[in-house]
Image (cartoon, rainbow, N blue to C red; front, side):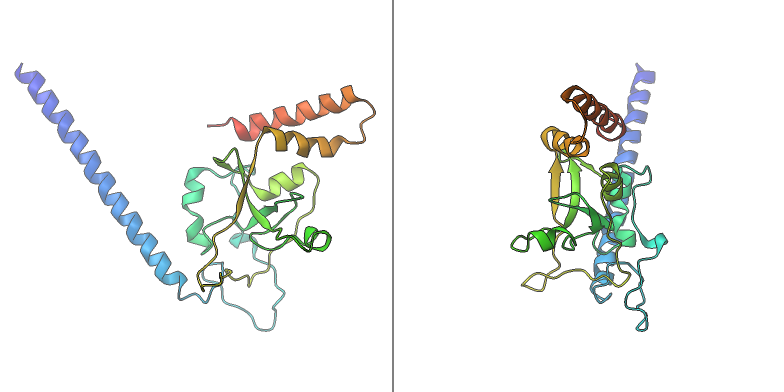
Length: 215
């Protein structure tokens, strides 16, 4: 009986220690977030943290080391998403996908192709999620569909709304129907319905295995 009580006491102490550690980590994370927010409002709105503009080169593209890409080349893990603020005051990837054509380009910027064909609509590069829970790497999706890419400028600034507050990044979602239509657009020239349907099925299976199902 005594041994059991001692074991229960040790287990309870272990649980308390874990809760205390988690509480400390949460407090430290909130402190870091507050420090980042304070820094954001002193950074003159440049999206890349620590960016120093060069007045003689306003058209410089963002440096490779400042670009936020998915480490696995396909989608962002939760750990990667938590680290977004370390590189960007936008707290999001550098690139998004066009909400109409899926091209990739600077997050929140109007799509350079669709803005010409659909001038009456607000079409921009936005964060693309698979079924609302998996953030897809924009370059992966654009390349997967054989589409183009618009590189980001180094001196991009966070956009403000009418009230002077920073705009939140727009997002949209990919589901089974839109996935099928996206891959269907890649195989419109296949000679027969059987060939086209077979090719679309292979594309979907590759996506499921590489993006939809992992962890």
